[in-house]
Amino acid sequence: MTDRARVRVAALISGRGSNMQALVEAARAPDCPFMIALVLSNRPDAAGLDFSRRAGVATEVVDHKAFASREAFDAALDVALDAHGVDLVALAGFMRVLSAGFVERRAGRMINVHPSLLPQFRGLHTHRRALEAGVAEHGCTVHWVTPGLDEGAPIAQARVPVLPGDTEETLAARVLAQEHRLYPQALASVAQNLHAR
Ligand code: GAR
Image 1 (tube, rainbow, N blue to C red):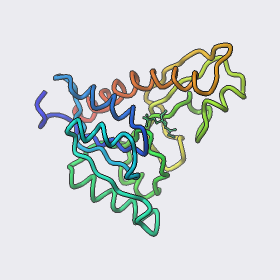
Image 2: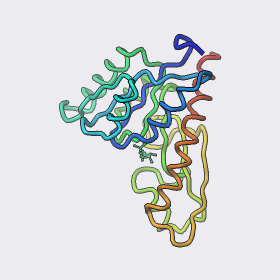
Image 3: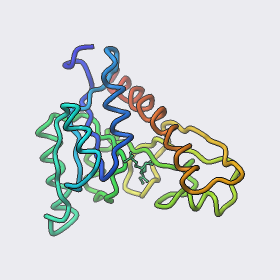
Image 4: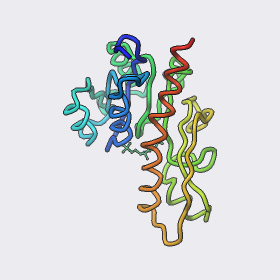
């Protein structure tokens, strides 16, 4: 597929960026319906920025600390996304809550990966909370972003077993491997549907 035919995706990160890396790698396939037009971080020191710069992907930092309000930060995000002609936003370990206005402007055009089987364990520390709750199964969800935190409709889920002796780290690693598989697939199906509109 030519670049002109692909859906232009911005991957928003705050840290390690391993999900963003999985998206960039998936977009290298010739028939992939999306391209990563921009990697944007709210943290100048996000480790994932090294990968995106080396991979030759357009990379921007919009440091939330430079803005007086959430709305001003979100307006700067809009400017960056528009400058890169972004059709679809993929939150990939982006740890800032976005204003309702920003989310509503991108309704149906913004997705997230979350490390739990939503609606279980919205918010932070999902692996610790799954272990504390004693669930037999855990996993990850790709979902639409709506103003309520981790409340948007699921697009796809992947399940993993919780094993005897699991720690937060072993469980997180098992889930993360599934995120890296699930997120590119789910993003591809969303991008296909945008094409078909
Ligand atoms: C991932 O596990 C992602 O699901 C989670 O942060 C991690 C980021 O890792 N996101 C959230 O918790 C969002 N609420 P990565 O930076 O290596 O992709």
